Amino acid sequence: MKILIVDDSKAMRMIVARTLKQTDLTNFTVIEAGSGAEALQKLETESPDLILSDWNMPEMKGIELLQKVREAGNNIRFGFITSESSVETRKQATESGAAFLVTKPFTADSIQAALEPILS
Amino acid sequence: MTTASSSIPAEEVGSFFHNLLGLQIKAVDCDGEVAAAAVAVYNDGEGNPAGYIVTDVACAAILGAGLTQIPPGIVKDSIKDGKIAENLCENVGEVFNIAVNLLPSHQSRHFVLQGAEYDGSSELPSADKITLDQSFELDVQRYGKGKMRLIQC
Image 1 (cartoon, each protein chain N blue to C red):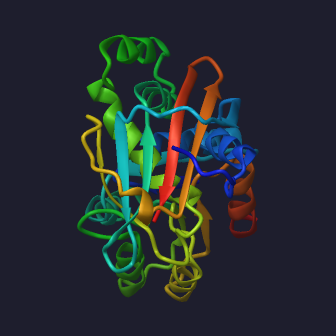
Image 2 (image 1 turned 180 degrees about the vertical axis):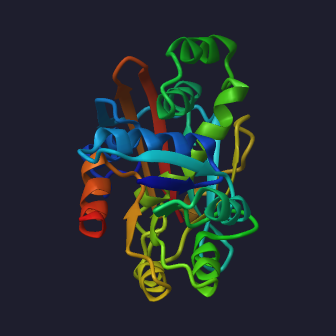
């Protein structure tokens, strides 16, 4: 399985990748994008199976990325990893087709708990 | 300056940074002054400054280095130089971005990180506007101790 991590912070992409490795999940590879635009490119060229995206990014927010992905008819599994935690944000994420929203700071357990239902 | 009553438990602060850095962290309330080296300003939903996180050089360097597990030597260098190493500032900014969740009203008032300064020059709100003011000392495994102040208006 190929997981695309989208975050404008290189540090945070690294932390998400590191945390994924600390879960019990196996047989996955990680690719990264530093912006929504780059994520859309990688969606075309790399065909990931899952997108884990930040919410607040310059130029294209995570929610806009999700909306563009869905408008293109792509039903790839999509989750948010973000410092946003309001009820409104969760509602907007779900209504736009996200499978989950994990709040930063996260743990290997919280990432695993979010991913297991959609990967099983 | 700290308020007499604590509304953010030190354990919660320690747990928050433990989850963020993946390191053992002990946080305790502290009464001493926090020498401002890094200051994050959070605006509320109406664009008004409503929250601040202030750290001393050690705390900023520890959190910045710990975030991506940069060797602890850079913390000592930052303390010795009296300023946060430049290559830590992006990491510290990311810590500040996530640390909005420590401010009690962040959800109800839609706090967003407006910006951060790393030279301690940011102006803090006057005492009459402050509704919460707490300081903590963080002791981070392998990286050492630093001080942090959380302010809400």
